[in-house]
Image 1 (cartoon, rainbow, N blue to C red):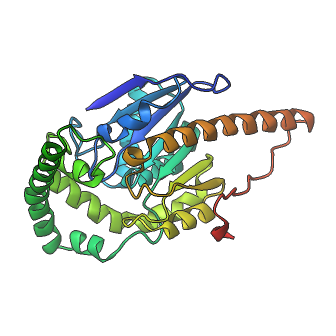
Image 2: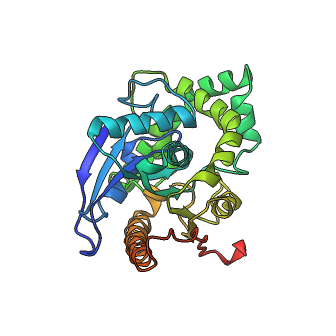
Image 3: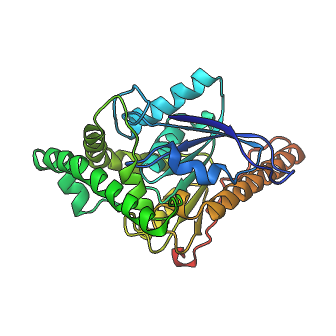
Amino acid sequence: MTADTRTTDGPARLAAHELVLLHGQPGSPADWQPVTARLPTQLHVIAADRPGYGSSRLPAGGFAANARAVLDDLDARGITRAVLVGHSYGGGVALAAAALAPRRVEAVILLASVGPGCVNGWDKLLAAPGTGQLCALVAWRLTPWIARARLARTARRRGRPLRPDEYANWQVWGHPGRGHRPLWRTFLTEQRALLGELGELEHAIASVQAPVLLLADPRDTLVPLDTARRLARALPDARLQLIDGAGHHLPRRAPDAVADAIAAFLAAAEQQAARDETRSLTFGGQPRAKAAVVLADPALF
């Protein structure tokens, strides 16, 4: 599934931007619909299935393969520069693309993104030879069915369809979309890439030149807040903003806060770029000093 949409009216001062929305693991473009409905019209949104999911015909891969797929898609659409917005595993993809092709990435926005310190024992089990394949196969045979049954029962009890923010985790697992490839293989491939490529990704993020906004919930039980803090410290130009009460599924459970944060961040980046250009002209074209990390989380100090 691919979404290519214009969104609602927003701040007049905000310029036009191309936004590429990268879903998590598992996930689909549907995860972004609550956010896209709230973004200003100046933001042109592209949300597509990542490799191995839904309508994508590309094989599943790790961060590097996904990053190349993002850049190839930009080429196919004739887009020279874009803002990459990644949730969870998609955050790792956004960072990989920004490191691989810095001139193509205008800014990066990460929601509960994977990063340093995010791997736990369950991740290692799911990526292990033999046991990982068995766990992935069993999970994708049982979990979606259980999730759909629970969602249907809850909707009947309430007498109405559930909103995207209700039982978000069950909705993500229950409706991942049907694709060209078995989802359990996609899940297993990405789990193994998470362990195999995370170190390389951590090394590469120091070279990310684009400004980065990190959004995270301190109560996220899947990706710890410390991961966002470590990313903020490692990235050359980053800002961490906390969103309380949404958990891991920020696009579904906090769409208003996410949409407002995206619009405000891009507007601020535009203002900073204008100031930098003025300063460069004033001082005879001398390059500006490297941007400092701006942090909204006092615990980072």
